[in-house]
Length: 473
Image 1 (tube, rainbow, N blue to C red):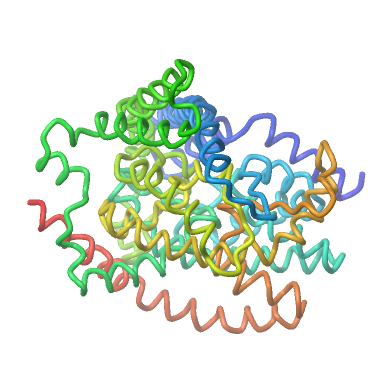
Image 2 (image 1 turned 180 degrees about the vertical axis):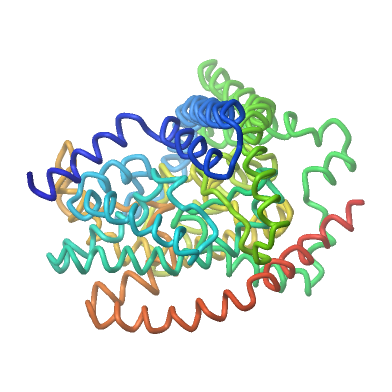
């Protein structure tokens, strides 16, 4: 049996069971290791599975309703750019199918476990194994360029190392804001935005942006029932629906779809918190056990966190509101930014996944989230444009139907990563092992500095976030 065969079998096992099965098993095992009794451990795992299944049902039902309106909006505006965004769903399937992807599924999992066991990180990253496709996306392109599978693996391992810092930087603030105790988002396509979110939030606070009270709670106090999350969802859904039907507003079918989008968005706002409560309850025994460990002398800042799926934050009011508002904003920016060739399309609906570090850092301030996310994603448009030819080569090997001649594709919210793509991937794609060596050498003192200042940075993030709370108290 060859190594590729083993990796393919592992890939099939994971794709068969998925995160709704894998994560509960991980939680059950961790509970037992931490000394939680069997009954509580069982229900922790079960509630995690119920929560993840509920998130999946909600998001998978919502996306097909709103995506056609977003696509109609693109067509109505007449934007014509050569690099088309095929979305994270198609990208993940391709990433898992490549040789580099299958290799990382096995070796990457072992590496992430080793980092946790060796206490290089206090976050159990494999709790969100599915989102490893974000590493596979970059590794697959290196393999296409160099045909060196070990170089592809080396890049992905280096990305894991750097991402450890970003995950830990975001962990406490994300856990506090979203209400999932001892949980963290480990996905590579999300956490590298954390340093920019922290620095940008500090700058905006210095400029007085925290005085602009665009948090859901503040909006609700100011405008009454119109500020309720469900009503805001209804209004924003209505807005997106209208923008998506500007060319056929006089038809009954158009208004049927507009109102469906509006009510569906309101439904997400109403139902999502209830599912989130079930999912959050899965981590209460782990939280209690982790606190006991902390009182027994665990070093400050090294208490246990479990990596969880980014779907857990998608429907949080400030996150979903910001994500919806950013759809037309990013479409406009894609059209006017000089040198950009990427048309954001399918992944516009995924914005609410990606912006969670920005929402957490700003403590739900929608105004600041939109400003910082727009800047970050605009930089990312250039990464999408520069890497599109390489990803098109990868995609063409596995696409069910061949692309039209001259067509290029990208993953709008996966490829637009200034750090993972611009600072880590692109040097390796050009300079190979030399770039890997330099990145490892740079990482070592960076990691030492991070460990020394971790608590200070996290406390600073809490202080900056508290400014928004003080304004709405």
